[in-house]
Image (cartoon, rainbow, N blue to C red):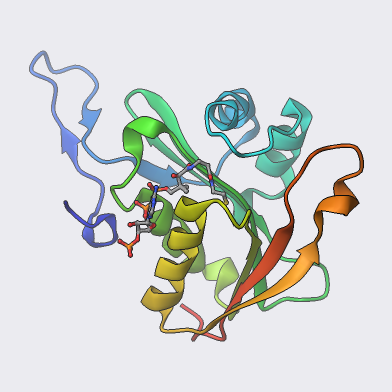
Length: 184
Ligand SMILES: CC(C)(COP(=O)(O)OP(=O)(O)OC[C@H]1O[C@@H](n2cnc3c(N)ncnc32)[C@H](O)[C@@H]1OP(=O)(O)O)[C@@H](O)C(=O)NCCC(=O)NCCS
């Protein structure tokens, strides 16, 4: 399997001279016209919590510098939302990572996180933080893989315990903190 971290986007010219097909997804910041497609994608990626469409509009409009979508000829196939917590300029908090089933296990989620860290405006980031459901092995493997790639330690502490979710039956969401690593 090819590692997307070594890819640059490739295009396959169509035989009829029409729109070229993307052979690997193109990564870019989202914009507000993407919010409905992102909402649909997240709805197809259990066990993620589906937020309101308005949340994805806000993320695409106000937090686009810290979010990324992957798009191929079939549309948006992956999305990462993240933000820099107020007053903590060296931390990127990763909120949701959603990769459509058709695009999984090709290194896309890791590639998108790496892409974010390479953005000039995020050049001062030294820590990634996220919360993960202890039973979500794919998510835990993704962040363990990121820690290895960054050559950084990973620490786990409690953050949002199940009882904080009120009447929802929600598992604990412990915090994973990766770093410090050298700014990209
Ligand atoms: C979790 C998810 C984002 C991973 O996306 P992906 O593009 O398939 O992940 P990658 O291919 O970049 O894999 C990154 C690492 O995680 C590992 N991994 C990915 N899916 C895995 C799985 N189902 N089980 C175990 N490990 C897995 C890969 O082996 C890789 O590790 P490596 O670098 O040591 O080989 C995707 O499965 C998904 O969208 N799941 C549903 C939503 C979700 O749970 N999101 C995470 C919450 S933040």
